[in-house]
Structures are given as structure tokens and as C-alpha cells.
Image (tube, rainbow, N blue to C red; front, side, top):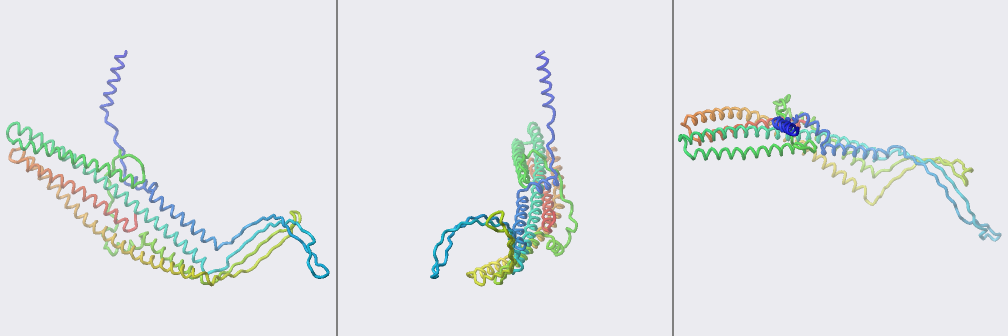
Length: 431
């Protein structure tokens, strides 16, 4: 019985060993982007900044709304009373103790000043600027994920190129060993073939490591903590609508759609309103106030009381604080205008760079495809000559190097084209 059980376990173990491991999961480009939009710390931080700006704007707006508060006071008063004598002098007749209770509802309402409205409008303009910055962060996050995805995809393709190279080098070594054995090739040819195999193994190890590192970078761009036991899908961005337009046409699109431009424009607007609010510090403010109360010496002896009025305040000299606030606001506005100009120049550069890279990568891809076809034909001819004994191991090695280099160049050209389209999308303010 135990022998049968052991035999069954042994057979089961062999069957499990012969069963190929399950294929690793495949990560698609859209999945990577969607994950980043939900989990990227940079994007979550930008969203938090929007909430913070909205809270600050609401605090600023509060000065324009009625201010109400309720109060309840219970106090015990101690004092002395005096009586006037016939000679006109005041004498102490005794002390008096009494209670006082007061329940009041107090309110104030700003009628007008020359600061609060502009401050509130400035705060909400700043909210719009932060929201535009969030959109810019979103677009940059998508760009980073796409770039990391295409890099991992390129490294995976390079692994395939090096695996093909290693297979060919092993085949060449096997042929050379047979030729040396029969004396049609010298010993040095076998040494060269073995060296080529060793070099191909080293190159394969390196590109496999690069692939793992690229997937780790992709995880970081997505904002996820996970292993690298997955494969990236072989996907690219399709040609963009209007990608062959002139740079000026693309620039017009970018200036209207780039959130960085909108953010800079809203910052200029916010700083301009802040400057107007600062200048309002030279002028008076007007507000209404009033209260309704119930007061008395005991809780069962309360009587009504109320008051209201108009108040005007004017800080006509505040130790020269207002001129300093105005100077600071003016400098902030000057800086915001300069930043807007710099952002427009940066947008122009990014559009021109992406457009030039896209055009160049299209031409490079066509050239790389031709180069690979020619390199593979050269390798085929070199292998045929070597097999017939009219070619040398040096010729065969050079042909293999050319084929491997051409394969790597094609991978690089495809990576450059894919990232160029991703960069052009981002340069235009799209995702």
C-alpha cells in the first residue's frame, strides 16, 4: 500500500513538473493609465491642493456674509452706595450686591469696503489656477506612465532580440565545432564562436535586468506597490488626428488647451485682484451692527433690550503697513506676468520639440526597418557561405553583430515614435 501511494505521489510530482507554469498576467496601456489616475501620489496631492484652495476661498468669502453670534452672561456685582449729607459731602452708607443676567444675539454685516470683494474674487481665481494645475499634473502623470510603459515594452523587445542572437550564436558554435572536428575550420574559429556565445549570454542578462527595472519604474509611475512578475502588452499609440499640421497650428491648439497656460492666466488675474484689494486698504469701510438681548437681575425678571447702528472705520495711518502690502502685491503681479510669458515660451518649445521628434522618428523607423531587412539578408548570406566553407568566422560574427544592432535600432525607433506621440499629446494639453 505504501509503495503504491509513493508511486502515485511520484507520478503526480512528475506530472506537475511537466506542467508548464501559468503565463504571467499582461498589463495593457489603458490599464496602466487608469491605475495611475486612481493611485498616483502626485495626482492625489494635486487634488488635495484644490481642496485646500477651495477652503481658503471660503474663508475669505466669509467676510462678505453676515456675522452672527450668541452670548449668555451671568454675573454677580459687588459695589458700594453713597448718600449725600446736608453739607454736600458724600458718605458711605453701605455695600450693595446684585446679580445681572444677559442673553443676547449679536450681528454685523459689512456694507462695503474696498478690499473684501476683490480679496474673495482673487481667492476664487486662485482656486481656478490650482484646478488648472491639477489638470496639468494629470496630463504629466499620463505622460510619465506612457513613457515608462513604452520603455518597458522596448526592453521586452530587446530581450527578444538578444534571445534570437543567442540562439544564432549557439547554432554557429555547434556548426564550428563540427567544422573544426573535420578540419575545415581552424581552432581559432571555435574560440571566436564560444566568445560570441558568452557575449550574447551577458547581453541577454543585461537586457533582462533592464526589463525588470523598467517595470519597477512603471510601477512607480502608476503609484502601485507590486512585483514585476507581469508582462507589458505590445501596444502603441495610433497616429494622432492633425499630427502633421504646422507648428504654428499646433501652437494655437496648445495655447488654448494647455492647463499650464490657464493656470498662469488665473494666477495673473488673482494677483491683479489682490493688488486692487491691497490698494483698498487706503479707504474706509462701512458696516451695520445690531443686537437683541434680554437682561435682568434674575432669570425670572428679564427684560428686552436691543440696539443697532451704522459703523464707519478708516485706518488712515497703520504704521505704513498698507504701502508695504501694495508693494508686495505689485511685485507678485509682475512675477505672475513674467511666469505667464515663460510658460508660453515653454509651451512653444515643447510643441516644437515633440513635432520635430515625431517627424524624425517616422523617418528613422522606415530607415530602421530597411536596415533590419538588409542585415538579416547579410546574415543569411554569411551563414550560407560559412556552411559551404568559403566564409570565415569573422565574417559570420560581423554579420550577426549587424543583425543584432539593426534589431535594436528598430526597437529604439519604435520606442521613440511612441513616446513622441505621447509627448505631442501632452504638449497640446491632451491625454
